Each structure stands twice: as C-alpha cells, then as structure tokens.
Length: 330
Ligand SMILES: NC(=O)c1ccc[n+]([C@@H]2O[C@H](COP(=O)([O-])OP(=O)(O)OC[C@H]3O[C@@H](n4cnc5c(N)ncnc54)[C@H](OP(=O)(O)O)[C@@H]3O)[C@@H](O)[C@H]2O)c1
Image (cartoon, rainbow, N blue to C red; front, side, top):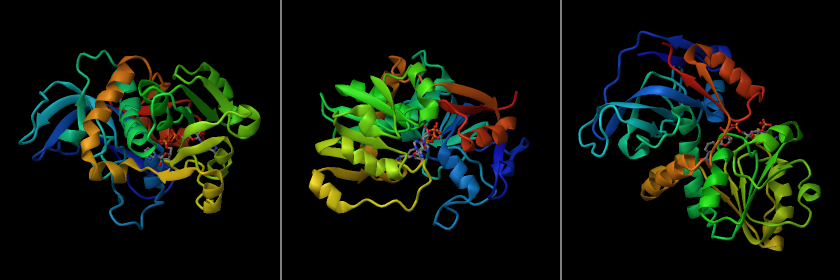
C-alpha cells in the first residue's frame, strides 16, 4: 500500500509519501478499508509538529497521520458482521488517531459505518460524517441540547464545527448561529451549512446585541471562550471542544460561572467515545441522515497524497474554507 509518513517531528516537509508498504490485514473486530479519501484535521498537524510527543501513547515518528477515512470494505476480521466486502463506508479514529493517510486503513468495526446507496459523495462523507457524529454526542450527552434551544458555534466553518449546525437542527434547535474571524465573513455568508446567521467573533456583543444562547460550542478557545460568557443565558452550557487559537494559557474564572449561572464542560471524542461506546451507533446514524439531507454541505478541497505537504501548509496558514481531504495516488 501507499501511505504518507511523518518521518520526524517538525514542519510540513516532514511528510513523505511511501509507496511500497505491505498491505495490513484486519484482526478480530476490525475492518480493512480500501481508502478513497482521508480527511486532514488540525490534530494531524499537532501530532506532526510534536506538540504532544511527551504524552503517553502519542504517535512517534515514523507514523501515518490521519484519523478519518472513506472508502470500500476490503476485508473483514473475525467476528465482524453487518458489513460486506466492496461496501462504501466511512470510519472514525480507532483510538490511536493515526493511520488515515494510507491506501489501506484498519478500522474498528463499531466505528465503521456504511454509506452504501445513500448518494453521499465520499469526499464530503469523510469531511463531515465523523465530525457530525462527534457533534451529536456532544450536543446530546454533554451540552444536553433540548428541542427549542439555541446554539452558537465558534470557528463555524472549521472541520469539527461544520458537523454541528445540521445535527443541532435535526435535534430541534430553534436557531444556530456561527462565528468566524472577520477574514472569513464572506466565506461564512456563502456557506451552504445550515447556520441561521454567521457573525464576527471578535465582538460578540456588537454582533449579537442582547441575544443569548443555551449552548455554545467552542473548539477555538482563548479569549473567545470567556467573551462567550456575555452571550450565554443563565443555565446555558459552553462546551470546550478544542483549542484552534493555540492559546494554552487562557484561564476561566470560576466565579464568573457562579455569577452568571452558566456551565463550562469539556468534550474530547478521543477520551469520551471509547468509554461511552453505547452512544456511537445513534450518533453515526444521525450524522449520515444529516449529511444525506444536505445539512452538512461544507466546502471540500481534494488533493493527492503527494500534496500532503501543501495540505498541511494550507492548514497552518489557515488557507482553508472548509476541509482538505487527501486521495491515494493513481
Ligand atoms: N472535541 C473533539 O472531540 C475534537 C474533535 C476534532 C477536533 N478537535 C479540536 O478542535 C479544534 C479544531 O479542529 P479542526 O480540525 O476543526 O480545525 P480547523 O478545521 O482548522 O478549524 C478551526 C477553526 O477555528 C478557527 N480559528 C482558529 N483560530 C481562531 C481564533 N483565534 N479565533 C477565532 N477562530 C479561530 C479557524 O478559523 P480560520 O478559518 O479563520 O482559520 C477555523 O474555522 C482543534 O483544537 C482540534 O484538536 C476536537
């Protein structure tokens, strides 16, 4: 098989295409997938840069980045039922958070879902179905969104965020507003994602006036996390779901939570889903329904594996309107 390796920690040139690797075979409970598309996420860049290199279990070079793929079932491991060879599928990370930028991916069967016959483009499928499934779990199990509730999504066009508006609408949200930096307002106005409105994240009070939200989804962090408190209704929940701002020092004043009667919770699918696998099937089903219904039409750019360096450079310089996905070389 072919795969893009991160051969060292460092800049995007650490990514190299290798074309003569042995094909892996699935173990019990696993599915081998002939990959057509591999999603590129910010976490892949963090791993490649070596940010988490000292944490136990984090990938060490050489490793294959990528944790979400679309493709067709190549082979089934012992005990796997409900999938057939040749069927179109999408798979989410199996825990290690690596292995995706490869022409063959070994997925865990419970994290692999069929999209056969659903009419979903595989590039779009890998871009949104895993994130929409993560969004479903976050909204139902952590944010406790109820029908009629309102939702604010920061970094609205980003990979993870794009999974939220469609699922929130499915769950009965009355209103879903997205925030972006000023440079992305035009892209926000053009997006087909089902936001009711896209606003400037740099001055929430000016953009939103007295509007208050029941749920805030925040994969951005930094000062945006705490400025969000001004637009949260009493009893509302902010979900800290990432740190795209790269601000690792920002603190939350817990007395503000008390004064305003609001909640800040964390949600990391990599930690939550392995310990709560019972929520995965419904989340994947909801994600597929939302995508098939056109509620997750994010922008997707497709590049070959040989341009993985370009893909990571573009992510680093934030030259992406939605998602980048990679495809194996012909
Ligand atoms: N909780 C989970 O289970 C989970 C799952 C997946 C990812 N994540 C985390 O979520 C975060 C985003 O990942 P991703 O793959 O979605 O990345 P992404 O596609 O690059 O999206 C990040 C978004 O955040 C915006 N952003 C970055 N810095 C900002 C700032 N200072 N102020 C306002 N907006 C800012 C970006 O806007 P521009 O387009 O203007 O740059 C972009 O829209 C990462 O920290 C990742 O580790 C968490």
